[in-house]
Image 1 (cartoon, one colour):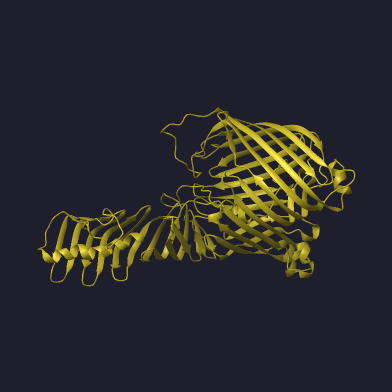
Image 2 (cartoon, helix red, strand yellow; image 1 turned 90 degrees about the vertical axis):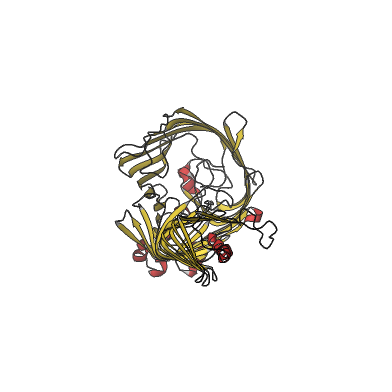
Length: 608
């Protein structure tokens, strides 16, 4: 609503009419004199233009009226209406009939507008329009923009506005450009504030989510919609990995933002464990938990500091073994790389056939390079260097390379320093792509058009680890795979199929004295698919097989319900004993990954 400041200039513009009789001219233009230095604006910015079919001025009442296709322009600000009335003595403007206000990317319309020049405030009745909530910034990268523009449409019974903000009553917000919208956020009160970058910050009071105008989901907490990724209001997931007495099973988590500054974020997340609530001798103390996420962005230094802490059960005499925590400071370098300083307490790693492993303490620093394009070869290259001081389960003497023996015989914690070097080279070759035509249907069950085709993916990776007790582990492997996407995901049945096959094999020398980073799968096959069944319903699975032992290393099942503007995803991994129910809202700033069980660091079996 910043554009409304120009209405103040109308006082001077239409005040000129007191020295001349009223006219019926079709176009009036008022421009500042070249010698006027009272305002810092340029001449073009101070030029106000008014067009209408009819214009009249009552000199005695000091009232100016314009009717029929009224349009007023000043710089990038535009006001359109069927009728416009300006009362100079009361310093008030009233626009009626198809009122429209535009400023840059933001546009607001309504049936009737009242504006007070003195207070620079106004009221717009039956308002509707859209606001730009800015480029979406990734949570872990302070400067990375994921989307160039994110427009949110709104409709309100009434909007009260000032120079840089507005407040709406009985507001409906939607990320859907089409009517009727697939998804709406309905709130009794919404405020919008203009940000320095020209985007808007939307704050919506507790209300409800409406899906397809049929299904209603209450939202018991306040929502903040802006250019930064945030946790969804409520998270539901399953996490059954830990010592037997600490396994939580089903987790219901509410995410409450205590700090909402663009550079500061503090989220307090109470957790409820229904299975432990009724099945534990500790009762309520064992059935609830608490999680905290803190982020401090330092844009001038291209840095971000984050803190994660989670307490599984309010049993303070067991505080040390029920607590998990991690402090991380990331600095983005000039070449696009990232330096990370980390301290973690009871950090979790997935180690393939060795399952989940807990690292009691880890302090380290690492550098991750950006992905580099090697000339005109089409090859992508990246590397990583890390040094860590580690306290975890391991073997200082003879190392058992058989996973079953290692799990059975390793009971002692060891403390060592590790130096790690890793590099990856990859390239993707398109084998087939269907030609794009103007007759291609628009997206129906996806936010963007599906990119169809078949790709051949190749890669070469190497990981070298050196430990302070003289041990070393070296693994170099090549991989080749096919990724096929067939179907546009717009028809009712079987219009989307995604198949993935990747084979990798390499040379393994030595073994890590720790369990959590010991490589036990040298040759593996990854198989995955995602298939549309009917409408927005898709089902998929991905599994990793150890070809030497014939064992299943990792498996994930997925059931998805995807629409153009939102989607539900149910995932379960029986190997990791974890799962999640996620709500995706396209174009808004809810990132369900931020609230998932935190963190499974070793997501890749052979990640350096």
